[in-house]
Image 1 (cartoon, helix red, strand yellow):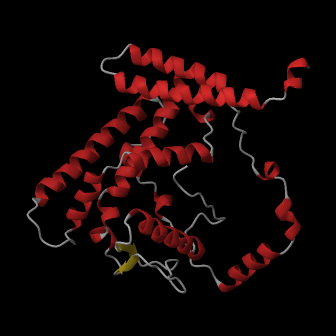
Image 2 (cartoon, one colour):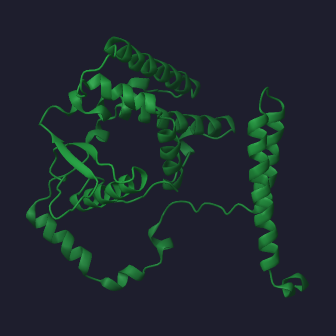
Image 3 (cartoon, helix red, strand yellow):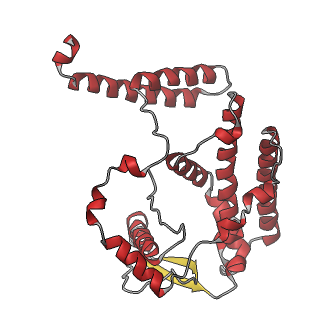
Length: 285
């Protein structure tokens, strides 16, 4: 998957995770921008420490206190657009769950599904949205750009996404539905880091290094989520046939039908490969 997953017991950003992320960011810049240096703007919180790091392609600039909401492009609309797309996928999953005759409160979404939504949501953020949010902050050199039009484009995009979420929330027929704007701005989501006290650091270090044989604990015992069923190649091919029938009922779907064909070809090659790897004795039992 095109992302790295890390977790932390506090669900807050900590320095070790931040430094790992910055180093990976710097590496990706080197690979994708062929050595061209980039500027990384960050809010100046306690977990954002660069001590001991050597970055080859990234110049990090920490924004002054209380300015992030005004001059950080991520806060100028990029984060909001991402959250709207993520919640769009989440709500529509819930809708499909309810339309299948299930109760909304019985839906269980695991980490893997959340990661898929994150990838899909970020894929919806195009370069125009990012560029407009940079212009909107007015931190770039003066150019011939009508900032009024850009601001209006950002607001219009936000209204469209809010309307879509509001319709989806209403379709769920929940007894006490949240407003779309409230749904996108849950207060708990704004807590991103913690300043640990000295005794807490010691406690966590002791917990980390004692009982080292626990590291060999069966992962199944640690994970209380439902196990995702394994989908067979035959079942995947059958599902593709349903997708193909749907596309055939639509207009101008030739390119998508070609994609379905390519995916099906990949599945059939994979299925044939698995059959060839099967011991011949298996067919006599």
